[in-house]
Length: 394
Image (cartoon, rainbow, N blue to C red; front, side, top):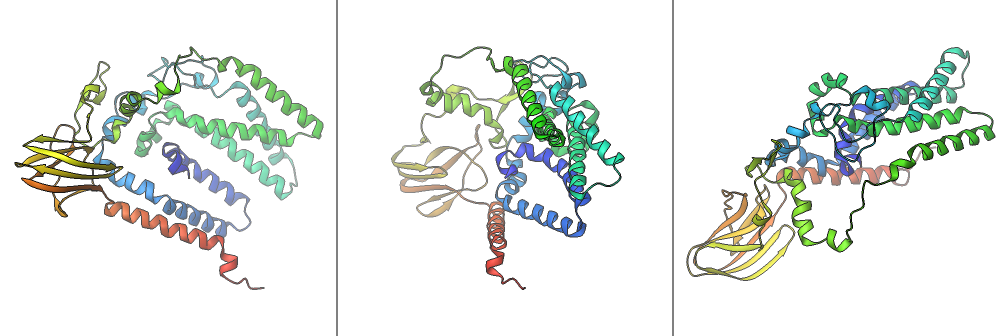
């Protein structure tokens, strides 16, 4: 689910996953069986999500992803966090920038760091000083030590000291901002605080300490819940066609086809060479020739048109050409010309009346990915109902 819901966080998660495997092996009595189950689960998860990541990986070369997401202000090399920023940094309302000019806070939180450290010290004391520790307690201690290791590692990955890892694991560049590892520091520090509270006895003291922690967190963070200013906007304004077609859409130009024109803005950053006035006013139109569109029916990934042409004409469909688009004229395949400024679908129409059809279909890569996901889903269902499908022997 992680690769589907937030694929950027999936990248650092794959680095953290081996730590979890190590914890499972340390605390398991059947280490070989645990390893096999873990690897099988990982393989099944990869196959289940193949419909998403497999085409993304193999077909991103047809988009501007690498040109817009890996360069200039999105280059991870200028977004490393300084150690003092992890301990304390002013709360801001701006963004990430090079050096110490960030307008955003990257602090983990003093209370989180202090209580997490206490949890580690208590676990280390129980691990190295106690002579006989019950297996369940031992497992809890290993869990705390694993979480603390992951916390330190996650914080380390936000700093420039980890640049050698970022340089070696080139896929991490798509994360853009090393401080995204702070998502994991929040998770692991919170878990460590919970682990420390679990050590406390008796129950009344545990409840009291938990209450104090919650109150302190609310008091110290209350001031952060105040916006810089409030914009006088309503739902109608924010969901207008202008907002959706331009303000929102222009933030996702990395997914347009390769060859789309780019220009350098005032900051020296690659931006699409497109203005709001360049947005199409029609879904389809005749570019040249004497022709008329007498019928038009569209749906996501589909065009159905009736064209009456007195002369040979050129038809333009206002959709980017991308692998998978296929066009037909009167049921016969016709070629798509994309040699235009914005790589839009362009079709030559001979004189006469014609029924034009254009559809966005699955490529072989997408078909393989979809079938892989389908087979994996059926496998998962079969495994879930194993005790009903396969009689259990006494």
